[in-house]
Length: 68
Image (cartoon, rainbow, N blue to C red; front, side, top):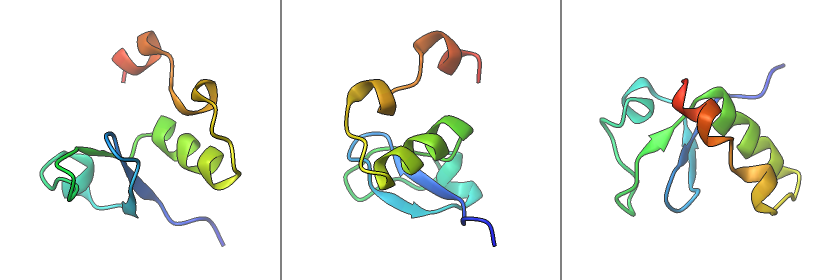
């Protein structure tokens, strides 16, 4: 069974189940931040779950992000 897809708050890193509304920033986090469910955020979620906390594991390359 595959892992369910989630969205990640870009401000507080809260994890929520994926919905199109959350991914499209139509629904915000309780902290006021926008959610994202892109491939990079899915990878960040997996890194966080694995206990990785260094910024290099958690922040995608700005150029790569701009191309999404």
